[in-house]
Length: 195
Length: 81
Image 1 (cartoon, rainbow over the protein chains, first blue to last red):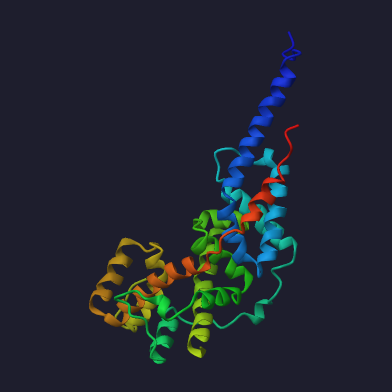
Image 2 (image 1 turned 90 degrees about the vertical axis):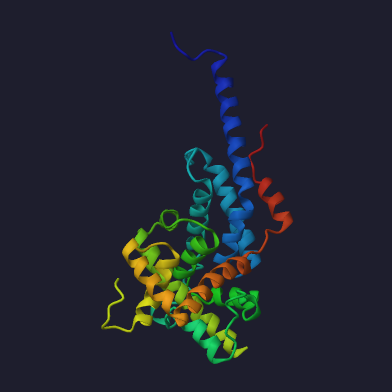
């Protein structure tokens, strides 16, 4: 006997609607966290808002391709970073124009030379660097490196999640993170010492 | 990576800073870095600075979502009927 009874189709539709609503609610609950990452991947608030709307619009249409139980935040960020690449926001700086990468002690040494080394006992980094310094330095880091810093150091994604979101090998995530943090500190040193 | 005697130990310690804070060193590498940090205030200050800097970068980078954006996102949902 066929399982398609007159009642089966409405039941199936109702179940699908329930699953979709649940997906949409869960995705919206993550919007604040997704926005924090989006905001630092692009230059302006307007771009971040556009990107968020495009991302959620696409996610709501493609909700069936999300596997329940997997990392929804990473899934949303994968859509978002792909859209960001499609929109050509990553081609601001060619590889041969990358800033010089200094060592890991560079920023502290520069602050110390300028007589502005932070009181490490008090951990008062904020007395030597401002929020604007960080935002501006981060925006000066080339996209490939910035994307990884934003996902791992700001978005709190694991190396494995960042690799999946950006569709690059985990080793590349680690090397970009290592170099990107050094570039970021070089940028911070320039700003902090010239201030 | 070993902090060998033929190289500047502070330069080697600088190389280990990121993997140390990422907890990405082997037990032996970690023990070696800590041995150096115990006796070197130059490196110890810079390691503590890096830890504080990472926290600061995370806090300073946060910009809350504009309140009306959440509603715009909610409006993108597929209508039920």
